[in-house]
Length: 136
Ligand code: SF4
Ligand code: SF4
Image (cartoon, rainbow, N blue to C red; front, side, top):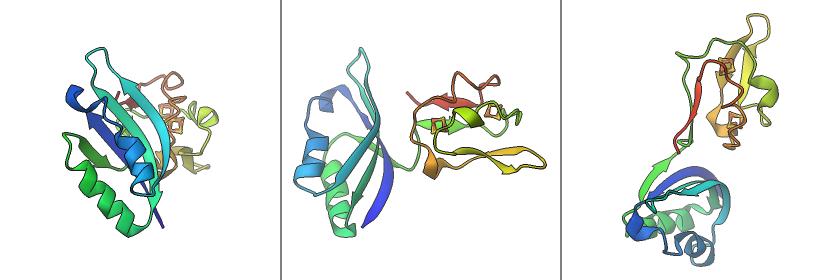
């Protein structure tokens, strides 16, 4: 079994199709939705984690590619900008998973582990330097 983070963008033409339902039903994937949003223009954004066998995963990606859905692997929904980060540490106590963490407690250097981020967005209002931002 493998687990992957995926970011999907749905144009208006695709937002009403039961694509995630099919990922579960036809491709046996376990789907953990982090965040979803449909804009007033009816475009859809979805950050999720999918788990399944390599074969089911490949079949599911082939299925997704039949639609006008933009698919990006990895943590795309939350961006941490190391150039803006002042290493003040304010976000660390607000990050529930340790995605934002001290690399080294002596120098108090902060780093971001995107694999641990669940896109709760708690860091956004708690970063005084706007180093964390959301893609949607
Ligand atoms: S979005 Fe949540 S989990 Fe991700 S880095 Fe920010 S506080 Fe941590
Ligand atoms: S609150 Fe912002 S500036 Fe401070 S350590 Fe966290 S990401 Fe960096």
